[in-house]
Image 1: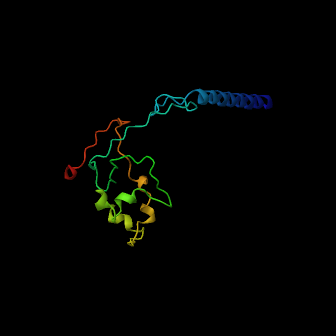
Image 2 (image 1 turned 135 degrees about the vertical axis):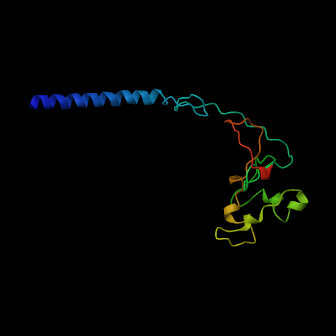
Image 3 (image 1 turned 45 degrees about the vertical axis):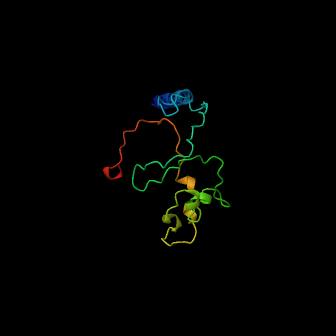
Length: 154
């Protein structure tokens, strides 16, 4: 009985160690058969990055697709300094400069704190424009899209 029990335990250890060893090989050589936006690439491989997308020269505003969508930026923002010390966007889009620059004024909601208090300057939570507003680029969609805006926005 003792020999039988020892044999069963030894066989169990052998089977478990073999399955873990073979699973380790699969993990190293296969990504599980999943295809992602990167294509069928091994996770350890590095894809060559795509060329930068072309950003159109200044053009008219782009229509919004849904209510409360942050407007997209119809011009390039490459090289814009937006940090704790400076915000290049405000040189054109602030209330003071927007009229002279022919730019869209920032929304009054950008002056409200989280608690709803209105400030005399842009709220810190809305200061970093490029967190919500993105530059519009001529790029093909990564995935198919059949979205249509609601009738009231058309």
